[in-house]
Amino acid sequence: MRLGSYAIYTIRMLDNSHTAPLSLYLHVPFCGTRCTYCAFNTYTNAESQIPAYVAALCNELYWLGSAVQQPLHTLFFGGGTPSLLSPSQIANILATCRAAFEVLPDAEITLEVNPISVTGDYFEQVRALGVNRLSIGMQSAHSGELRLMARDHDVEAVPRTVRAARAAGFENLSLDLIFALPYQTLAMWLESVQAALALQPQHLSMYALELENGTPMTRDVGRGRLPLPDDDLAAEMYEVADRLAAQNGLFQYEISNWAQHGKECRHNLQYWHNLPYLGVGAGAHGYANGIRYSTVRPIPQYIARAGGQSAPLPFPFTAAVEAHEPIDAQTAMLEHLFTGLRLVRQGVCDSDFQARFGVSLLAQFGRPFAMLRDQGLLRQEGDTWRLTDAARLISNRVFAALF
Ligand code: SF4
Image (cartoon, rainbow, N blue to C red; front, side, top):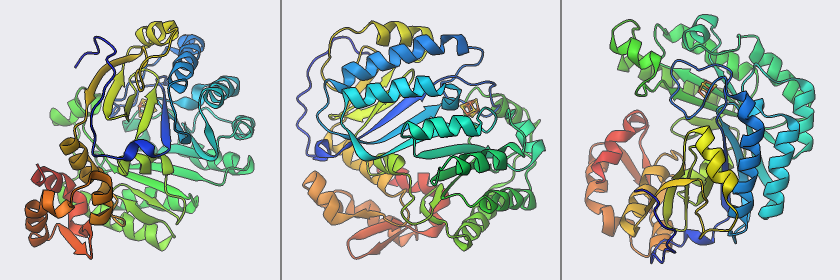
């Protein structure tokens, strides 16, 4: 749906999530090079636009913040490569956030980092600004795999980056890995997992390769130029990585995420708890006040629209919002299940569901839940429902059955 006029929505939601603290995602759509598997809204050779982009982002934040009541408890600089922003640009953005919103004193503030572009001095400066969590794109410990993905860093850059971050005082580090890559064997994958665990991160994300439309990797796999591991091998990679992570004190809390106790990503938990979040920047997504929305994707259009706003709009709109959709109660309940069941330890609790939506989980979804339980894909303990271990790898099948 295109945003034609800024009507004030008066959707009567059963959902009471509007009282929760908010999360804020800040999209930074600049990268040094383009990875072969990437379908994110990000651009290369566009660094000259960063100053104008930061100015537009700050203007968007200013007007959005002026319409917000709830405090922010997480901020996440994602991309793209947010570490292409200078410390003074990050300082400018964070100062605008603190002026426009109430940022809680213990807010989690994450910066995504590519291991190529950062030094100890950079880490010290952004830590002094309040950034307290780093998410480092490791992806693999094999130089051949990094080349295949067209990553712009070498294997040694990751431990060097982790050492520099620790020396600057960061105590909450997350690493990302990708498995089921072309030509990847179980032994190669385990070497990457062991290399990541040897760096003792507080948090580890391990994603199966997703073949997104339009990427070079998808094209080459489609033409038979790149062989992928079969499903059984991918499942074995996942199971073994889960065991290794647990042996090293990282416990799975979401389908693709492991953490030390207390170091789960609070920002991403906001998504998985289906609670409201704001998205700013080019091609960002948000969900607040019963409305899911996205902003315009090309950088020049974003700069023109966000930078040109000169008055507040009804929450959660800004001039950069390009599309939006009201989320009705039935959709909100389904999304609550899709995101909540991803939390493999926590699951979805009937009493929480009732408190939020005013209706019993089993009254709404009793039949598919019983069927999925009988198929060994859901398990019930008291009034909590969780994916079984077997279902973690085929969660889409579970979610499809709930429609
Ligand atoms: S660094 Fe990240 S956002 Fe940039 S091209 Fe690679 S995968 Fe995409």
